[in-house]
Length: 172
Image (cartoon, rainbow, N blue to C red; front, side, top):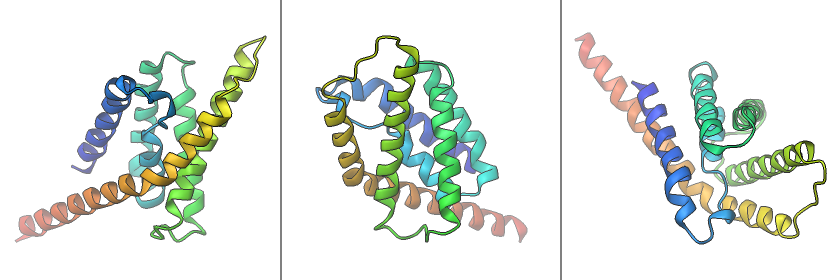
């Protein structure tokens, strides 16, 4: 049942990212919305249950993005593994630090994108507004990621308590 929730949230984020966000006039300044979810899964959920969801999310985003295949998958997997590593020494329920973790994830994603363009383009020139857009994306991640993280935490806790309640009723 929890996999249904993981897949439903992932699909909602993909639909929002691919269909609705490009219609906004400032769509180039909005960060990749699955990043906070991938970091949430790495920080708060069991790794063996959520790694397949992260890979699936990356594969779907790779298919829809039109970029080099494997780019989103590798970014999401590395962010997920980084979040698991952070979990070893960071108190994950500290809501003050979590927006900074998401902002760092958005910054790392932007650096990987710029690195990929540099590798694939022979005559690559750094765009004049790339630093400004990356800064806006990181700052917006600082501002909006607590809303997403609280929503994810609330939704997953409700689903967990519902499943626990159903399993106790089934045992009677």
